[in-house]
Length: 197
Image (cartoon, rainbow, N blue to C red; front, side):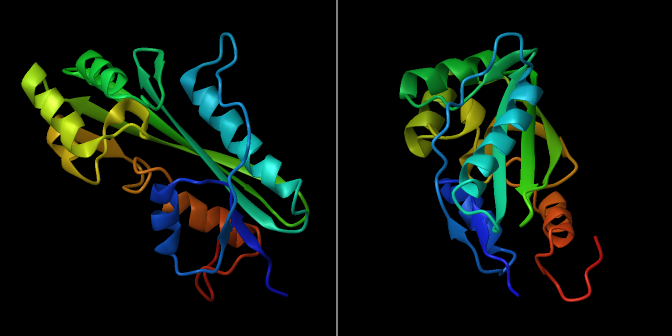
């Protein structure tokens, strides 16, 4: 029997990535509080929220396989979330320039029986030192208000970066497809016939 697959997200970036696998799924946005807990590291926040998102949807659709994901940018221990406004995006980018920023993309897949499996994928970006003019021009053109750290690698944001180190090139965009393929296969969702997790 084919298991229903649900992406617990309203992110168009995650939908575009999941579309690459060519498998049938639906989307549903989880309604959760995405605030960090006191003393929680950025990595722990991402891991916790990825499971909370998946669980919120699984609880509504028991028996489905649900994907949850969350991304947090870490600048020297300081969490950088989605900027939401032009001013916040500029502020984030100014604080990041010339530094290494670690983006943790956490992934949780809950199988049809309700068992959760979580992994994280990390990408380290070395940001260029930029002029105020360059930052303003980027934010005006890209409007990266819905991306952690305001840096969108899939578009002009690549010009902000000096180097990128990652275990999965899709991780920084918001959904690590290599890890996801493994977790889906373990959850009984066929990505490719004969693929072994």
